[in-house]
Image 1 (cartoon, protein in one colour):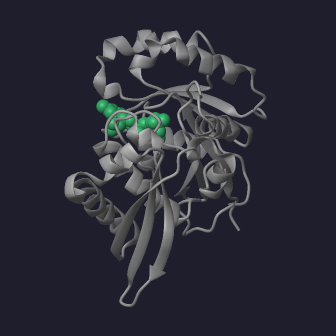
Image 2 (cartoon, rainbow, N blue to C red; image 1 turned 90 degrees about the vertical axis):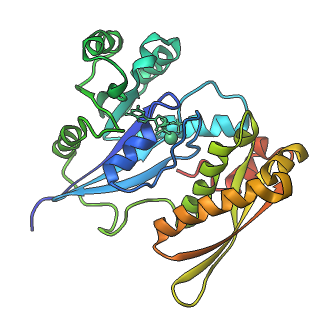
Length: 300
Ligand SMILES: Nc1nc2c(ncn2[C@@H]2O[C@H](COP(=O)(O)OP(=O)(O)OP(=O)(O)O)[C@@H](O)[C@H]2O)c(=O)[nH]1
Ligand SMILES: [Mg+2]
């Protein structure tokens, strides 16, 4: 039998640098939700890729920022937690990060962390947004602060630099047995992935603080005849005013969210989906650790 390799590759960095877009590129499927807003990802999400005898478990993580609520704390903690079991730590930055002090805070903490000799690489994403002449200067800013085994310049949007990066990951993982069955592409349940899809549509459509103050949970998931599924989801908000905004005039907003989410959930499942959404107010859900645990936030 031929020798197999297995490893965890964690994707960490500030919010909005493109970690989830990269994960989707790596696994070739839209597993992680992506929006133009910060703090889109709330829990670690594993996406699995196979390259010959190598199985790579990519870990997408919430962006690292200054936490305020219990939810924020759990998000940031799970991002740092992924470092502990990583074989390769990928620090993702974007051109804008070079001018920001937050990234130095991330690098300083990363430097201090005991990470079982994991290899550390720097990935500069969104290179489609800058002139090649500016890239070199930028890389210098980051590499002055920390030693990286390798630096990659990529664009998750155009796919530029991704094949070389994937080859490098494949060549640098330890020998070992695969941890997941071959047909597995994610560690997340389809129920959670479907809730995230609805949250993605809410994040894109709603403004200001509303999308940050809501979450989506599954009420019921019922397989029907003819390969169809009925999904009931509950959108939990923290204020009555937010409930009215989510519903919209004569239900127009929630109707549109439902249409968009149903389409993407059906694509993910390969099934016809009947999606039913309701909205509930739970004032302190973002600071209620038990409630957050029940919602599956901070599980891995
Ligand atoms: N131009 C350009 N935009 C990108 C690229 N990669 C990601 N984006 C955009 O950047 C935004 C943030 O992408 P995400 O993948 O959600 O970023 P993230 O790091 O996962 O963000 P959080 O989950 O909030 O921490 C989205 O609007 C993406 O479309 C890229 O290579 N080039
Ligand atoms: Mg993300």
